[in-house]
Image 1: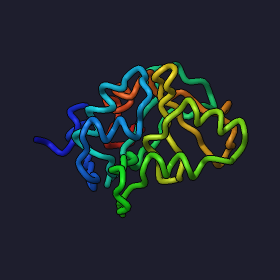
Image 2: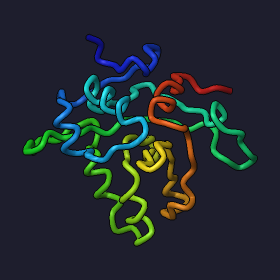
Image 3: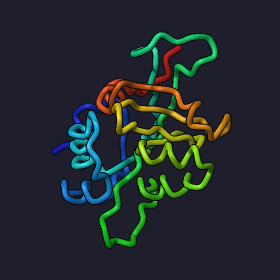
Image 4: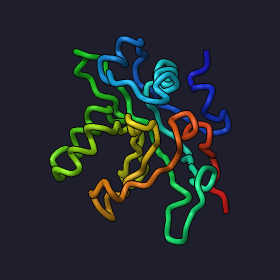
Length: 173
């Protein structure tokens, strides 16, 4: 069995996955249903988080028309892991989804509301997160250097699987 989900290109180095999970382990951390959850669970059964050791990019123009000033090329450095309940050991390579949530809690009441309906699952080297909107299944990106205002989140892909399938190992010029 491959150590990489089928919908992530084999041309992109993806390493340092955390401990193997069961569906029950995933459900204990991510109990809500959302569009694309089946693929999300499939991903985490094969690779519990991990790093793009040589970088990866997603281009929003694969899905949306981009206006001047909007982000098109976004780097993705890692997918967060899901900890095993009761296991106090942390990954040295990626943070967990609960830790990603906790590091953003309390930024503002508006952001805490955002966290109620969005799940962080990946980040870039600038410590900015990618989130799945559990109401729509869309993947969003927040650049915290610009703002912690969730109204400034940009939609990156229509779903988790679209996000994963669109990742590229090389930056497009």
